[in-house]
Image 1 (cartoon, one colour):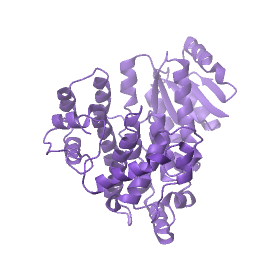
Image 2 (image 1 turned 90 degrees about the horizontal axis):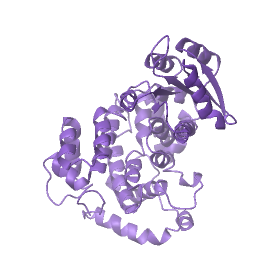
Image 3 (image 1 turned 90 degrees about the vertical axis):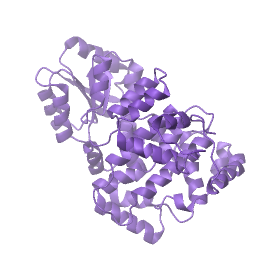
Length: 409
């Protein structure tokens, strides 16, 4: 049973919320209060998993209330209800809000949102770590540039308009140009401006790059940590993403496969930034005993980097397929499924990079990673292994890998 607190003054709105959640009373324990102070009192008395607050409360604003919740009860998921789409987008950029929803959202949308944050919350079993992740407000999952990109892409914007938006952030623009001219993407000639990069990579991929670059920048550790290399984590993520995109090419969700592979190790950044000493000890033990880091992390920190990264990304609203791919990229068998999914593309791409590209390896995995033939046969994809190895051979030799984005392929 999950405990959910609703903070809403308007009686009609409360009744609407009751109707909205009535089908779920068997799985949710729901409490309603009328104002912010009553909400804080309830939170102090009961351990709630989620708090849903109206943007306009009688004694304080919804943002002021959720700011207090973040400070005093950081492990609680914070959702705000608004009346207008524009206000919803504005609220979603604020660091005290995990999710923003419209008052009149469909019941299925509300249920999916709450279920997702609760499911991801269960990935992290250590309460102290959940508090830690709940306190992180520097993750730029919804920077203004990303929100605007998402909006204009829905309008089928031109490459020129997309480029003009991206160019407003000089640091991101420089990094995108660096990447598009690297071996990751195999451009046939040097690309010198963002407009050309958008045409070559494709608008969706540029949006994913903007998002991931912001994450890497915001979660970059402040101190030197022995055995930790942000550059190597980035390189492994980028290469795995390109491979995953190729594995999943021509299937629905290829952008999610790219994003999940690219962000598979974002949890390491969380640990390095927020728990450097304990994470450093986990790295040391992993290297000395040649044990996978994610196994050691459970003993030292209460969760693996894959679980912590997925928890954070899920709370901030990334697609469930991306969150699942990050969460289970090491332990894909933990997710019962009969058909290949995006998490499989992430898992396989990680293994292929480990096996074939020494300079792109994940430095924190065991010395030898092999494809699980029994698992591949169960998924019905074992006949693709030779094709994958040829793909990796072309990449290792400096050949260009195919891709769906822009003019690549």
